Image 1: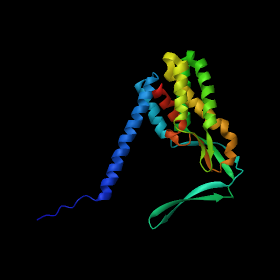
Image 2: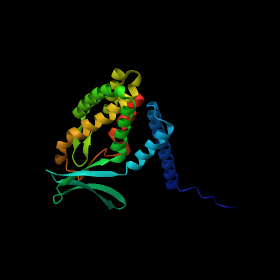
Image 3: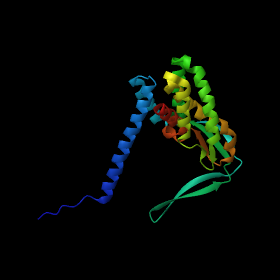
Image 4: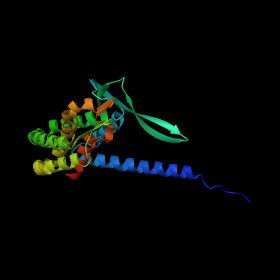
Length: 227
């Protein structure tokens, strides 16, 4: 009589998590592709933008260093009996914050916006009005978080950008929504709050900070889908 051993439960759970992660990624980038195609971009350009966004999310380009007025908060991971604890600590020796820009989370969306405005110049006046409105709204809800950076409620920027596109854009609503969502979020959340960076206590503050999944990138994509 042979004995058949059941698969290790841990392996099963790891495989299940991997499958869910792959499906989630495919769905997410499917939505991204659908939004970009609504902007009138070719399939080849859509694929290039998605790949550049993924690769660029790993790249932060330092822009400047700002003297911090508060101690820099860093997170250290400590393992106790196999359990990982994240413990914040303050570094009083290093009192500077590096301001960087993320390629996938900020530069790529801005280049897409610039390309759309170049391709559809008649949209520029409406897009500028939308960007101004979006910047004001995002600035009102953006908040500095110690040790992290400037954060905004995820749903607010794309929702207002979509409304701007619908109300002002007409048949070109997706383009107005995308430009308002990306450029307006960049200005309202990041640029208008640069004066608060020296009180955050973070070693690095990245514009487009969380890469591909940052507010700038998502604001443009979700705004297009909503419009």
